[in-house]
Length: 268
Length: 287
Image 1 (spheres, each protein chain N blue to C red):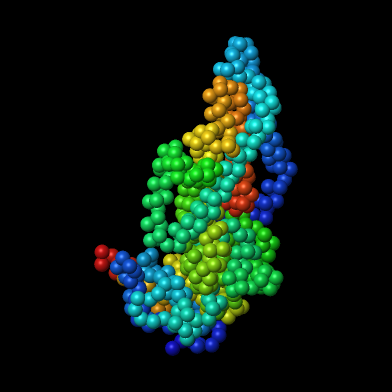
Image 2 (cartoon, helix red, strand yellow):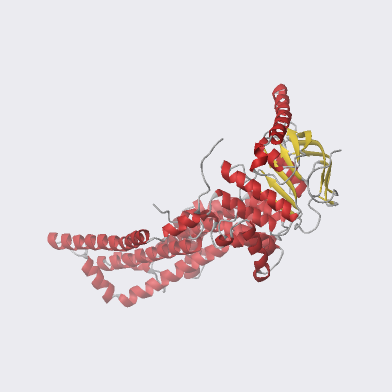
């Protein structure tokens, strides 16, 4: 087995075994999903809409229950371990409270944990400067651009110092340049904080640029069809985007993804 | 694929919005917003005065504004007593409508079955004209003030109830998920998520309920007639109409309108004060 180029040890962080998710209306969102993710990995879930990638993420976070099978995170059943501090979650939209300023939004997870504002101030200010928003602590979400709002959202996810960062198509609504920039910021967070990241996306380029491993999923029913390790080393930057390695990986992942689309067409 | 949009820099935007021309324009607009309505009303009153004087309209048909003003001064004591009564009635019914509407709205938002069972009652209370129920309430409740209070309350209560229930349910789904993820207690969820999300709905309801409480109070007084010892502005109007004291009628009417305007201005101000810094409905757009 190729040694993957991510940092950290190789202890298993997430284990999904034979997981099914069937919704109340009978839709099979995920079928027979088994996956093992190690600490320090940067894994992308890539697939067409309806392939259950977001559902899988929600189940790992414990927001959705599994219909069958089991998920453990850090040895605990999903959603039951720790006090919620271990996981940071970034939604597709920034999902900020419009009535609260940037500081209050980032402070929220600590506030729910019972920390007083004075106790939390330093941590909040640290993550804000980490995402370059130190001067916007008093701004309201409506005064910020889409990219800045997403940075606030990332800061909020990072304020509890999570081990695992779950990101559900976080940059899908942003323009290309902002997206590229934020991709680099996420990579640097991952590296400096020894995070494990699961990144849901429908962009081949994004998944190849970011991840140490791409899990390709297909729809109807949602399932894993390919599990592709990417051996290119980090740090990855603009030069990596130009490299033959990158092009090669994109080709591999693209063709794997096209396979899933063919299946869909045959079935319907 | 190749979008050329660059991340806008709000720092610069915010800076330019504080430049002088904008502020000057804003101040001018603010002045106009006060000066124009006052001027328009003054002109209308002058025209009224002139037409009454010019056509020699008798004061028992249409009194001139000056006569109404004079009546306000001469009957000040009795009119004020009535105004205080109506204000008390309106504010108390509005207060009770807020308390009842919010509590029941919370209950509705917490439990679907409770909402489904109780909502029909709320609707029936709302759609039955208050004029039709008021006589019954006046029969059953011996204390006239309490009877009037109940009538005004019924009218003002419904918008608060329905908007609170809708508002509490309107919280963003991802934010709800976020609160679950961080294991928020039910109380934290209510305080930090549901209540702020419901606030714009509640404020909209308050604006409506404020006006309705006054209407309810006036209508109930009309139904009660001049029977009670403590009488409000509506019974003053009735009484004046029986005695053909038209200027006094206008004076009382003026006070009722004034009360309505004050309630409207106050609820609007409150809404702006509470929501102004974040909610779309109260944010002034820069043109």
